[in-house]
Image (cartoon, rainbow, N blue to C red):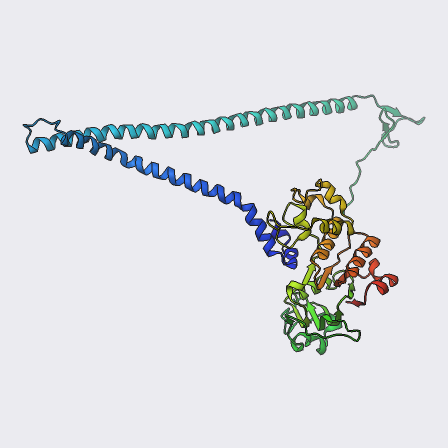
Length: 453
């Protein structure tokens, strides 16, 4: 269920090994119990099969003892001996068959006792439901009787007749009656008032909105070069001697229905830089992250990335690790180290202090391996802080993060990104167009470039 809910996030983290290790550890007691169940069933089947042939074995054993021990009279001929063996065998098998029937009846009686108990429970439940229904009917009848009594009292209340000095005449005067509360009774009842063909969404001949229906846009995906994700970058450097970490050229993405999200996107990110990709909601920021991780097939262009082990993706929705210990939460997506493995807990505590999560260690009384339900304990903001701590722990060559500080707060979010910049982690960050990250004083000091979508 967890993998179904967080499938995209787990895939972006590339946490298949950690998830598999956790599942195997969680299913180990289930598999052990299943093995015990199979062994007991095998033993029961062996005993049942042995009892089925026990009657015949007992019969032949008794006959062998009688025949070969000399218990039969010596003057018996072969015919008499055969007749005696046949009669004795028949009597023994009849006795065994009767005993078997008694065992079967005992099994049937036990089944009957279970069925009788269930039927008794059903009858008790039906009696309880009938009593509840009777109680509800009594309450409803009492409420109806009370309401009827009140209506009768209102109808029997004296009415005041308002007359004029003119003589009573039904044709010339109209009687107006009021109740004891003074409300006028109307003489007549109130009147109630009456009261396009779908477009082709294929990759080679997709069509977009009115702004992109010309021939240049319609041939965009068919004429663009195919997506090539290189396994390793060449040692290309800028004028300051910084290594080129990621490069995107003429990159375009669309939705599965053919609607164009963005086109001809090009940018380069050098080592130690931080780039911000901005845009309104739904413009394709998360799609760009999926495309850079090779999880979005509806894209064209060129994308040069480091090897997978040197790139770390953070999804827009933060996710807790499958493990129940604080150590597993911090080192995710790495696999939980085995017992006895040396772990620098002082460094891990320092990382929690840098992202403002020192209280997590206090919740577990300083025990990194204490089990807790972190998915329910941590807020979205705390999960995002924990995600930043994971990036600091793994220290990848490139970190691509989809709105990583949206739930942290403006000032704290900026501090989180400055922390990554301080550790010289090359970062590509997405953010809303109206987020505090796009403010001029922040973007100029924090980001090497701002890429609008």
